[in-house]
Length: 217
Image (cartoon, rainbow, N blue to C red; front, side, top):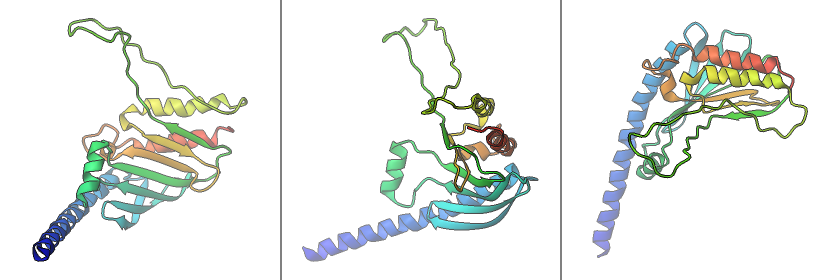
């Protein structure tokens, strides 16, 4: 009985180990593809200095950005955690996306803390509807929830920049008084050659950072 149990345990360990090795290598191949996307998207604006892995599905890229606006720039890439079956299933179930997180200090630290999240809602006025029924669709603009009474309305410039860059599909943008001053998260697919935002993403990042410098929130 114990012998059969030991064989089953050994077989399970071997299977999980093979799974880990196979998908860890697959993520390395995926990383090489992503790095090429980054070189194309940041061509003429930034240079990749080194790559450091912090897990089987996560790595950091240190960059040198030509613009004086960004300092100490880095990118964190989160791939699908396929190296463990349970992590992969949880990621699929929660529909987590592969993401790229751009972090940098600004030439002048923002005088405010701000978090902008990209959420989309869709609702209808009737519980039941017919397939051939006509609908009137209304789209609302961005809105701000703030805890301050004296917030500067120039902050709407950031909202306008985010709305204008709808193809990039930013998941969140954060400004802090402390380092890192600027953080932006986008889906990894925004850098793919099939994306309309591939060659515009750096310009959008720079425009958002310039809005922070022009705002005294």
